[in-house]
Length: 332
Length: 275
Ligand code: SF4
Image 1: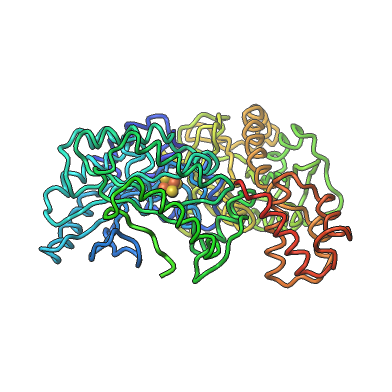
Image 2: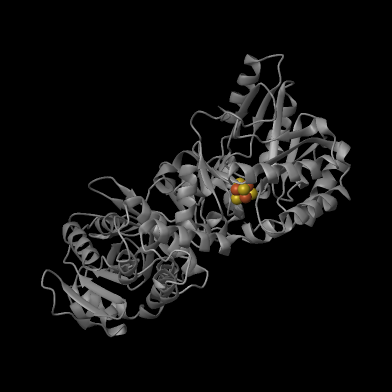
């Protein structure tokens, strides 16, 4: 259900636009010149819009794939991100997207072919070396799959480029499209989890932990590589027991030897995003915990963070092989 | 606070009658009708009047925690039925070329349309949109004071290519009057959204009470407000927080800004320990 669909004039006849519009027959359609007209004005309230978002169908003109910020990646040398979508279907209170844009509307850039061209070109520049692309930077990669058909397009596109690696990052259970394709070792679906208490309190609209584990299982059984992202780890009095329980639940179903990579990181937000989300959600406990500003990032005091990471790491390494573990060390 | 902005008295009358608003005799720049948390201002026709009235009434209500707005009025159209009511989801200012996009209101029973705002009455009706003389100026002015989700326009068709614009004020009022049920439901939904914002704030009077406790720097004021908004959302009341600050029997009995802030900060960390 979307409140309205805004369509850029330049893509109103695009085949992908027409297919998406056919799914939202009852929503009013408003033609716009450029998505920035609706998405960028400052007089918008992200929190209000989040409960009633609109969809914006747009054309991305340039900069289809960009180098990732420093520290983002899985140890590869060449790392890029690309966003076919801005904003997310879900509403995680720790998500940096809340403070990123003025608007909570969801933008879909329908010109996937232009993204594919840029990705092909970047890979050609690095020929024999692996090049990583991350698609879950400005959105959840798969949550809107029935509407976007993103994986359905990009899985074949990545398969044909030998040195291209793709991380699909998701909290969704939308793996049906992936399962229609033959698995590819260079396309990793990374599932993010927080333990049950944080999930209940902070991840609004996100499918249950059990349902996501089941989606992972389906991919593993079909031969797809998967990853696990325990990021963010959020402090509460029972986080240790709850995190251990999460690991037990996951690894009672998922064979750790099928994992491509596992990463771990404590809750943190860039200073400006933190300021913004705190303003939007003054009633949110997470932002009133014992947090400090360090190097432009708001997070737990170093000693507390180290203790949390140490505990979680210890627990994790009881389940997974060390070689696939990637701690997130933003302090360095 | 919900503010209605109408160009003419005959367009405002159905709103004034429906909400039983009373004329305010305190102000003379514009005619204003008020009751409780609802206000209606008669701006006069045209963009300039609409912008001036919107800004003026916003300044008048600057103490309000949040203002929601509706521009109510009549509009022309090529073929839409006389008396049909529309919410507006796109406004094009014909002279400046600027475009604005009011955010659709959830569950609204009013169908939405594009509205073109002109400097002069427009006899060349556009087949896809309504024509008026205020919406663009109203909207762009109101966004200086409120978030876009709280600013809406409702237009009732008064003339089309078959029926010319009526000069009879009673007829104009009647066109809006017959839509007041759906218009009032729309305004109620907007009031509810506005209340969500109002509840997140702290009233000016209460804020001043806290500020009077010590001298706070600008940064400390931001920290204080953030603390108070959180603690109030967790069930603390203004009086209980004042009592905590004022009482000698607590950890921050010396009343300087830093000790007040650290006491409140500790309290919010305790509250948020378990999310
Ligand atoms: S699923 Fe990811 S992108 Fe979506 S709201 Fe949650 S953290 Fe943000």
